[in-house]
Length: 198
Image (cartoon, rainbow, N blue to C red; front, side, top):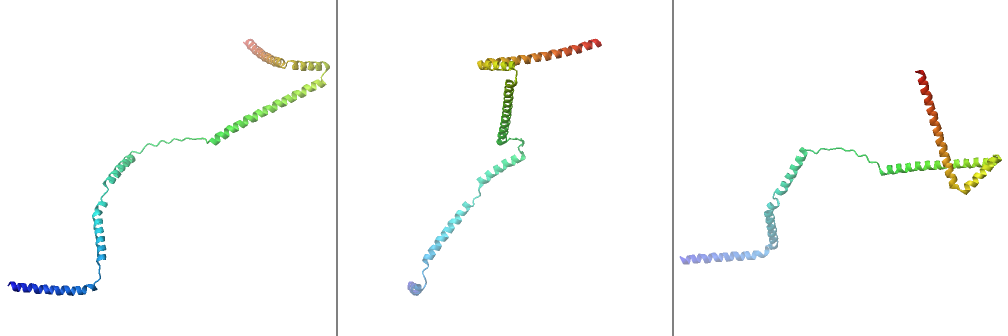
């Protein structure tokens, strides 16, 4: 039996050799796809790795959702209790308006001052003309008095000015006193009339 078995094994091996020989003859006609298969194998490996890491990338962002929930709670609380709005109206004048007002006021003050100067100058001119007229047309005693006043004025201007100012002040005070006396006399006259009626 062992011979029969041996013979069978040998026959089978011969058959396999013949088949392998036939396959070897046919092999050169089959193209070599080993490079393409290697590239496909690498692509498949990369795809497997990306599929394995996909759950990690698609992980639910719990920390971000928690932060967003806290912000929403704060906003909801603020919306439930809105802050009181106090309206205040502030009216501010523009700096240009203030500056133009101040400049306008200064312009008015300067105009008044210049007007007063012209008025005073006209008064001086009028007094000069009056004085010169009195010197020309006055009587000899008046002309002598005017020349005497001129020489006194040139001799001591300050003393003459002070004496004229004092004389005018005294004259004005006398006029006020006379006016008060006249008023008191009128009041006294009224009182006398009222006393006579009673």
